[in-house]
Amino acid sequence: KNEVEQSPQNLTAQEGEFITINCSYSVGISALHWLQQHPGGGIVSLFMLSSGKKKHGRLIATINIQEKHSSLHITASHPRDSAVYICAPPGGATNKLIFGTGTLLAVQP
Amino acid sequence: DVKVTQSSRYLVKRTGEKVFLECVQDMDHENMFWYRQDPGLGLRLIYFSYDVKMKEKGDIPEGYSVSREKKERFSLILESASTNQTSMYLCASSLLGLAGLNEQFFGPGTRLTVL
Image 1: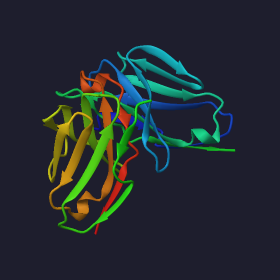
Image 2: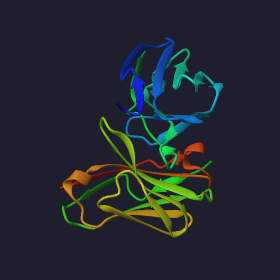
Image 3: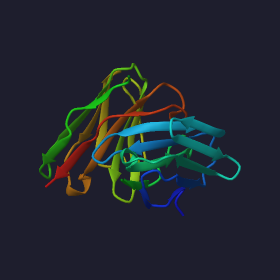
C-alpha cells in the first residue's frame, strides 16, 4: 500500500465548478504540503498546514490529523487552475517529504 | 521572491557520459534537495544537503553523486549516464530545520534524455 494516496487521479471540470481533491496517508505526521505543477513547469508550494483549514484566494486546504486525511478545494474553478496537484506529508525516519503521484486537473471553459 | 534556477531546461546525453546538473538558489537557504520525477511514481528524493559539504542519501541515490561547495549551489552528478536515468530532475531549497516542516521552493526542472 502506498504511503500517500490521492483521489481522483484525473479530474475534468467545467469552469466555475467547485473542485475537491483528496489525500490520505499512512505515515504519522505533524504537517502536510500541497503543491501545484503546471504542464512543463516547475512546482509551486500552495499550502503547508498542520491543523484545521487554510485559505488562499480561491484555494482552501483542510486537514484532519487523527484521520490522516487532507483535502484541497478550489472554488469557482478557472481554466488556469488546470495543473497537477500533489500532496506531500513528511514521513519516515528522516522526516523528508513523501509525495503523492498527483491529481491531474483539467478545467474546461 | 525566492528564486531557484537550474542550469538547463532540456538536456540530451549519451550512455556513459558524465552529466552535471546545477542548481542555484538566492535566498540563503540551508537545505537543498535533488528529486527526480517519473510518470506514475511521483517525486523521489535522490540527495539532500543541509549545509556546505554536507549531504544525505535520499530514497534513490544509486548512480548519482552530489556536490555542495557553496551554500547557494547544489550539483547533481551522473558519473556514467544510463538510459534508465532519463527523467525530469527537480531541485528545491528550504530554510534550515526538519526538511518536511519548511516550505520548499522548486526550480523549473531539467528534462534529461539519455540515448
